[in-house]
Length: 78
Image (cartoon, rainbow, N blue to C red; front, side):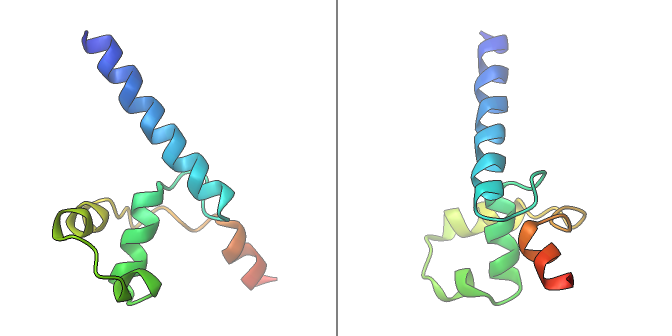
């Protein structure tokens, strides 16, 4: 049972990173972390009235060392 739960969790993380990558984000950053960074920086996600539990999850998902390798950021540097 534990192996199945680990598999499901890993699949969830992989799909979240894939979704973020397809939207032009860093392949090693989850979609939750990206949305959390937008909330923290006062971006588009900060203007949406998210439920408190979802908002806390996204803010807790922020990894400061991720996000520097996004396609959008690369385009801005060029």
